[in-house]
Image (cartoon, rainbow, N blue to C red):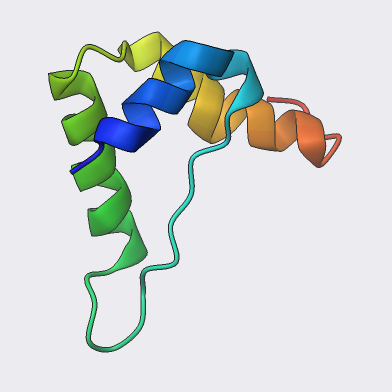
Length: 68
């Protein structure tokens, strides 16, 4: 499910990745459920919880010039 994403994260590093989805449409899961599933799948492939925080919170905040 997330093999390509894991390859990219390992190749460029978590500090260069932002995690997001385009879920939330009526026929798809809620975006919160989809993100949780993606985080769990990444962790199952060896991506750390700290890296997920970096990619889902810290990096987007930096891009928006917000405090993480």
